[in-house]
Length: 573
Image 1 (cartoon, rainbow, N blue to C red):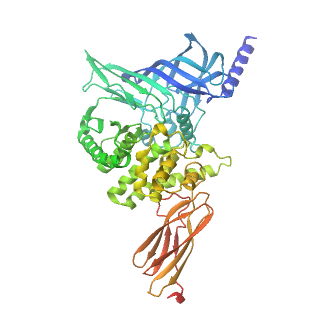
Image 2: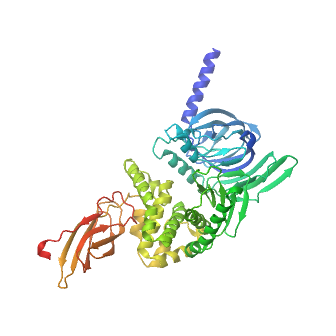
Image 3: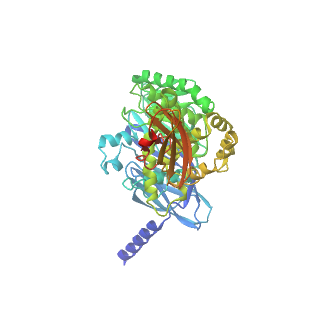
């Protein structure tokens, strides 16, 4: 009978875990004390978290997930221990590809919009681990350059959800082998938790080192504190996220030297001081460009060097973690422009904040090397957008959250948004765009059409058609192509070429149309709406050869039909 009882309890627990709504509760507040012990690669956390039931029904069970290399030690509510069971939960939102999940059973149901505060304790290690990548075939060395998060003796840097769940989260499982599921899961989490507050007290105590270690994080923080006592070093920092927005809480610990300049602070290894100097110079030179477009940076940007010279850079907030072993001043400037734009132009909307930062990089590349260089910089993003749109089109159900105004897809609010800003500049011109950006106030951005109205006020253009197709809805990508190009000789030995464009796509665009001749070329801009055609007559003094629609400034699903060869009948000569 005892065996039967245990089996029944186990079965009930399995049913309970499988039926739990992992997204019922929203995390609204974190207050964590985090202790880092590099010699043991150890992390120990104690603190409080507050969650709110955002489901439509009362909930008694909730999920708390941390990295699989961490272990739950205690969970209390109102100073009383609560029942919970732990299990391994496969998910690639963590670098190990697995989470340690606690299924908590509360003493009473939490009604919709009800809140509960939990006291939690967990600890364990954070080693270098790229299991989620190696198990899908990525070579280990390559994987470790991407998933470089680690607490180590000489260097520690740890990102949050999407990399390492070092603070409690709760999401459904996501797998890198299933398309964009990981990026979608992390994106949705960021949107859900955008208003969450987080306070973290970071503390370290270990063997004395020269220079002593510095603790850093990617948000408002107290000045890092360091102290030497006998053979021990202590470091601490208080980090505060008033609202996490799209930031991923991140911390780093290392024996850094500090280069402090008016616009930037760089934490670098002693051996890379010259690279830090070059980076700081690139940032200072970029400040006037960013200021002209987006205003004066409102806070200093910060760079933290990664120990692995081949590690992929990572930015969150105004903090960039990146190798500094190279000497590419152009790359340093490009990164600095991105960071400085964030510092100069805050916005609660990802498509504005991130899109403008990427747009600024393209603008800077154009200023340095011309329009084609900017289009070449943007080209890889076109392919990424097309791939995402193709995957979404294959889903017959669709998702209203794919619209740029509220998307959680990084390819959209970074890459697609960059193109949207580039197209807006081409449509209304630089002066009106700059004036609209100068008039923007993030605290007033409560209405979805706020930015549209600013742009219309400064340009005098009706942009409803553009925002409806590109921002408020996701209608895919345009498919502009030349249907025909008819040349007609004129009395002055020239030609008039009538070019007709068609766009079978579901979204319109204003595209450049270039008529190439034996001697020179002429470009006109045409607004071609969805499922529509439009024509233009172009006068030319030389024999026309071909028409090219779209120079790459408008993302589209297929650019293979963008060139139309002109054949001039004998009767035309």
